[in-house]
Every structure is written in structure tokens, then in C-alpha cells.
Length: 478
Image (cartoon, rainbow, N blue to C red; front, side, top):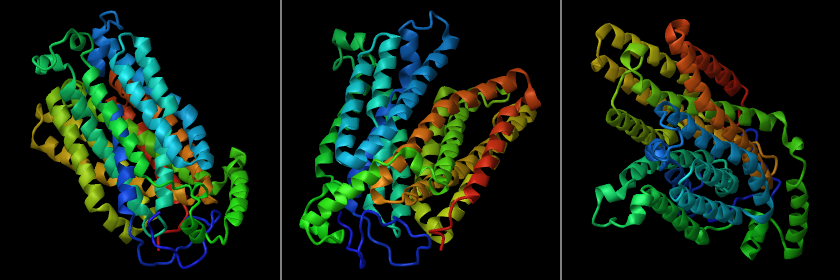
């Protein structure tokens, strides 16, 4: 790791962030190593989200629904939920393995697994082959937790918040690029008939975006060769031994054996309030975030007489892209300044407090459309307010990753801690969209609370998250 040596002896059982960290000069981020991690982090959403523009059409063309177009979204939801369920079942195991065998081997398996899965998805001609390919991707890919662990090992208490903010930025970039790529490359025989004139492209019209996504993952796999192993017990050089405070290879061998016993400790022994509180915050944050993002396009597309905006698909795509662009800009330009000014805990509480006003803008826009009869400048202003609120809301992710990483009692328990956090987050993301959209449909169909019951329920849950945020420790705020 190319960060300067610390002036005191550090070993694997040193907590990552002290209970009260004093102000000290920031350690420069190791740019090359962080850059590789960020490419790996952007490759994952590019691949996984590239299917969104065409998944509904693919399901319809395969005849899965028997001609019932209303059931298309149901099957698409099953495919995505199964991915998160499969990931939730295995991500903790991958993270714990990374505590023993190293971060790079687990990342390599995840990238290759996702690569093969994307190719299989592009060649799928039945619903079950689509399901299997997505489940394989979820089972083999534990990278998201391991990448956060590696980030925690490449940073220290002075630059950790900036490092984790980059994760959120590059994830959002992947979320923008992936759908744009998937939509542009789907059905290439219709767009570029001279280049893709063969019968193969007519049989597999969605293979090209899957193949390009697989190529991005393969490129990320080869970039792994330039990534230094961040698990210190797997680095045997003299400089590493010295930086860890060991005087000989025999001494580091004894420490490795001792730390392996720590890494293999029962999972229940990690379930202390110090660990559970940040993970509970992350889980609720993930649930509300995925619910929010599921409601946005649904609200945009719902007819105005049912309380939506009735926007066209093209307008919805433009607004969602604008949300992503503004979000990334806020994370890049404002997060480093605000986190230094407020501290991680205060910033987290401010960020999650934006959820309630964001939700309140939905019924306000419904009321405005109802009285004005059209989407005018007042609706545009409300949408712009939501743009700002969602950018502030997303700052919560950059801070909660700091708390989860800092909760590890020892450095080589980072994998287990991040794996536990990612497991609960994956489960939340599996249930969030279905619950949010079902609440929306139920409240509109039965006019519960004027059709606004879904927003009320989610605002209450947002209040629960605000209360959980107050339980976070104080370190890092001074």
C-alpha cells in the first residue's frame, strides 16, 4: 500500500479509527490503487444495469407471459429480486473467505463469474435460463463487500471518508452508463444492419450489450494484476513486515496464525452494538434508497388522473439521467467539503433527514397537476428540488461505509464485517422495490389516505432511520 508509514507501530489488531480521532494532516490517497478499485466498482453496475432498458421487451418477446403485457413487470421483478437473494446468501461467505485467502482471489472469481453470467444472459431463450444466469451472477459475485474492505485497507482515519465517497460516485457513474449502453446496443441488426446482418443477431438481439458488458468485466479482471493485495497477512515483503511492526518473517508468521484464528471466530461474536448499529443503519438506508428509486419512474409514468405525472418514456429517461448526473456532481464537488465541515455523523443525520421532504414532494406534485391540469413550471421546480435532495441523501452512503469499516475490532475482520453489512443490504434491496411499488398500487387502487399511504409509510420508516442515525458513535466528528 503506497501510503506513508505511520509514526507509531501498527499491527492487524489495531482499530481502524480510534474512538476519538484527533485532527491530523490528511494522508494522500494512493491514486493508482484507488483508481483500479474504482474501475472495478464502476464495472459492476455497468454490467448489472445494462439489462434494464430491454429486460421487459426481452421477456415479452420470449412469450413468458402468454401475451399478458401486464405481467411483464412481475417477471422482470422476479429476475432482479432473485439476483439480490442469491447475493445475500453468499456474499458473507465470500467476504469471510477474503479474510483468509486474500481480497484479489475473491475479486477475480467475482469478475469472471459475472462475465460468464452476462454472456449466458445474452444467449438465453427461456425464462429459466434468464433466472439461472442471474442467480449464478449473484452466487459468484461477492465483490461489492470485498471492494469496500479493500478501500478500508487502503485508507486511514484521515482520508477514509473521501475514499468511500468515491465508491458512491463511481457506482452512480456505472448506473448512468450501464442503462445508456444497454439501450444503445440492444437489437443491433435494426440499428446497424450492414454490420450485424447475420442470422445470429436476429436470434439473439440482446447479446451485443451483454457481450460488451462482459468485456468490461474481463478488462477489470486483467486490471486486478496491477492491484496490490490489501490483506496484510498475505503480503510477505520486508517493507510490509517493517510497516506492520514485525522484526522477522518468523514473527509475522506467528501473527498470521493468531489473526487467522481471529478471522475464523464465530459470526455471533461480532454481533456487538458497535457493529450492529452501523449495519442496521446501512440496511435501512439501502431499503429506503431502493424504494425511492423504484417509486421515481413509477410516479413519472402513472397517469395524471391517478396522481402521477404521465410522462413519456423519453422524458422519464432524461429526468432519471439528470438525477444521476446531479447526484454525481454533488458527491464529487460537495461531499469532501461537507464531511470535513460537519463530520461523518452530523452529515449522516442531515442527509437522511432529506428523505421526508423528498417523499412529501410526490403528493404535492400530484396536487399541483390536479389543480393545474398539466405538468408546468411548478412541477419542474418541484422536480429540481428533488434533484438537490437526492444528492444530499446520497451523501449518507459515503459516511455509513466509514462507520461500518471503523466498527471492525481488527483489520482482518473487515471482510466479515463488510460481508455482514452487504448481506443485510442485499436482502433489503430484494424486498424494497416490490414493497414500495405494491404500497403505491394499493394506496392508489383503494384511495388510502387520498392515494398517499405509500408515502406516509415510507416517511415513518425514514423517521426510524433518523433515530438509528442518532445511535451511531461520535468518533470522526471532531
